[in-house]
Amino acid sequence: MSSHNTVTHKSTKIKTIRDVVEWNLCMGCGACVAFCEKENGVDLVDIPTAGLRPRSGADCGSCSRCLAVCPGVSVDAAETNDDEPESIVENLQVGNYHGVYEGYAADREIRFIGSSGGILSALSVYALEKGGMDYVVHTGMDKAQPWKNRTVISRNKPQLLDNAGSRYCTSSPCELFDVIEKSAGRCVFIGKPCDVAALAKARRLRPQLDANVGLALSFFCAGTPCSDAVRELVGGLGVEADEISSLRFRGQGWPGRFEVQSTKGGEPKTISYLRTWTTLAKRRPFRCHICPDGMGLLSDITSGDAWNRYTGEAESDGISHVVVRTGRGRRLLESAVQAGYVELTPSTADDIIKAQGIHLRRTVVFGRLIGMRLCGVPTPRYSNFGLFSSWLRTNPLVMTSSIFGTLKRMVVRKLWRRSPYFYR
Ligand SMILES: Cc1cc2nc3c(=O)[nH]c(=O)nc-3n(C[C@H](O)[C@H](O)[C@H](O)COP(=O)(O)OP(=O)(O)OC[C@H]3O[C@@H](n4cnc5c(N)ncnc54)[C@H](O)[C@@H]3O)c2cc1C
Image (cartoon, rainbow, N blue to C red):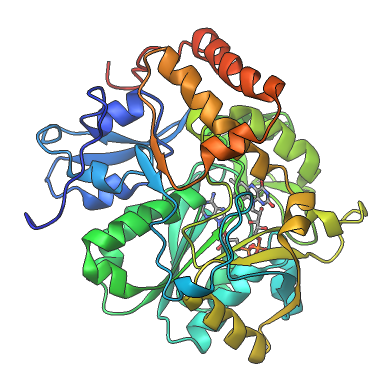
């Protein structure tokens, strides 16, 4: 294992995974846990007010190998796994792509259960049934604590549908990198943009992991709320956490409602998608506010809500935007269309911009990093995101507020110093 490259962060303040957590740069993907080779190295703990975070054990501290796969310290948009880079279309706002579409799962059940168009689930079903993949690593409800997530492995359509739909809470699918690496088959990996960024790094270091991931799918992501936020949302509906039997964030129609079922029976309690997201979004960790990639630039295919097509009618048929990032993604998508698993029509990067707000975050990240540096706080290294150009293209008001707003946040939320969490 000594042949694995290690990467240390340039900042003298980031030497271990504990530093990443304490400086609020972690988003809980779990890659460090899978990459740790020590007996009592790192495990994952849910900090209810922050998210899933690595906890260093007695053996941690002597090596920084896990930092090599940590998207909290660095992300490079050029680290893509594209096997057809010559046909890429460059785009500063939505990221480079091979094609942009809107569409949905051809299977009505998948479209209904899925988050927007059920595209990610439909592509996964295709990959298992016809695409030569053996299993899918993704995220579902933690049955013991339904307001939380757990990383799951699905091997067929019923299992995939059991775990379809967005779960707006901290998740850590990268914790299974070592399982994927050691497995005999090939898999589809579904994760947040930061998860697929960790995967891109990990593949370069572990050839067998690279060989075993046949497809990396992602979704547009504005950030992952902490588990306390979900618990409080449920509490507001008069349901105690220990009496939840199931919890769905959305799906079963577009956009779908947040729905909690109590073990005491009765009608499920529900809230609209809009109220759910606006409440939960207030509890996203700091790292999500300085994320340069809300659109899965390092995936093969990314899906998001085609909000520009949403009529405002409660619970219509879902429509997703689909962005193809690699040649491998294009080939799989074309085969899935031909085999009748998904239905697509061409769309444009402008349509995505009309549908989304997340591309705007990239325009302020550069200013936010300046704000952090002015406070002496270590910043992640971001490469090839065009952050400076994006920032320059905004207006002077946005540029200055991105710096001074961050300075204010650093002071008010005491982010200028380490957050000790559980390392006290
Ligand atoms: C935290 C979060 C923030 C999001 N922000 C936006 C946004 O700003 N704009 C937007 O358009 N869309 C956003 N989405 C994505 C959107 O809700 C849909 O997931 C996307 O449209 C894909 O829908 P689908 O019907 O193709 O996916 P589905 O077929 O429903 O499949 C979704 C897949 O994602 C996996 N998954 C669900 N939750 C998580 C999670 N927390 N971590 C890792 N994997 C997960 C599931 O296991 C499933 O395989 C967000 C999703 C999440 C989880």
